[in-house]
Length: 306
Image (cartoon, rainbow, N blue to C red; front, side, top):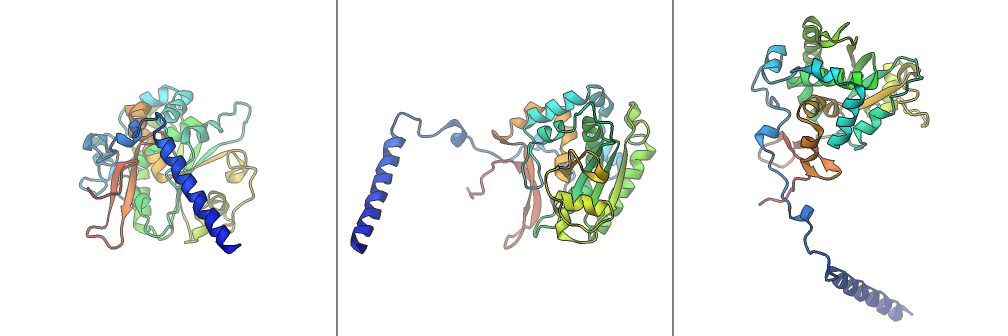
């Protein structure tokens, strides 16, 4: 019986191998267009985070010089539906790990008959080992994040954004708070964001170091002053979120790329990387390497050394 079993397994493997050879010669092209295309390196003109290594001032003047807050009012004037559709067109997916389509997530908040206040929550509780991309954004590009909060908040009808930052990120929290103060003083946020009829506030909340608060519902519990424990789903945050109100929770990088997408167009962002895996992404390189760093590259770039 043992010998017959070995024979049957080996025979099965030969049949599979023969089937694969047959399929590979059945008229389909050997290399599809997606396989032939080489992704990366990213062109400098397509980089979103141009101050990743803090070569320029991270404050408002430096941010304005790099193009942040450029014609933000014009973008707001195009309307909520336009912003959501443009983000859908871009193919932007959540940069926190789950990869859920951002535009689709925002569309869950567009309920005309719901009179409850709505909130945007930005998850900056970055606790995974070897991950520090969100930390670099907050440290060196805080105004990209704040502007992204304004645009995302307007798209979902939110009255405020809560940025929940990891407790260990003390210096980053200080930078972010200073940038928010600059934005208030310059009229970028507040009662009339960018001289547009939209009132929006941004708050920073520091966590206490619990890794579980990186999960969105545990984060919401912590924001409410409770112990950070995940909630049962459903209901989802879009229905019952912060303070029992409709809430969208997004990652720092997800929100920070939104202004550039809306300025350059969703088709530009969708043209980078593979279909359903498009855009640019921050990657952390660490471990046994010569130069540990954070880099921005095109999605789908190969890790093979050429």
